Length: 174
Image (tube, rainbow, N blue to C red; front, side, top):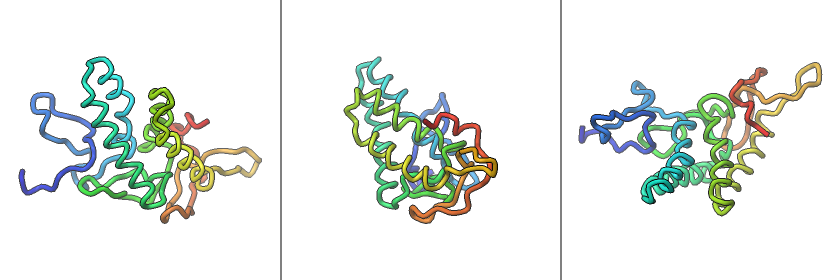
């Protein structure tokens, strides 16, 4: 419908018969997960390499750049796990390197490596996110074991309320 505002992030799925029709991850709230929006970079870069058509990499790079710009603008490099579907803003204060966010952080580093280490912006954003991750999510259990908290709450780069559990999807963390 032309009454709907423009969708700001890639949809999690497409209708193969009508790819121009966007499907939104959480239709009732128009939210997108950070992991879904930020996890196209590697595949689309490879698709551009395989086809010789830069349009795929350019589209994925555009999304990645908007995510990095949003993180810098809000001082939330450890970006919240939900995005507003129709505005370029975060839809949550919950931060995690686990479910709904893991792929974004993973692909920052992998995208840098895939670029032959030329896309320094990806590396710098990954480093900024990992610095905030250490502040927000690294915890020590009562028996002295270090773990990554499942999630915390971010107020523009100030963190509190870390959950005393670890999400299995954060296992990729170095």
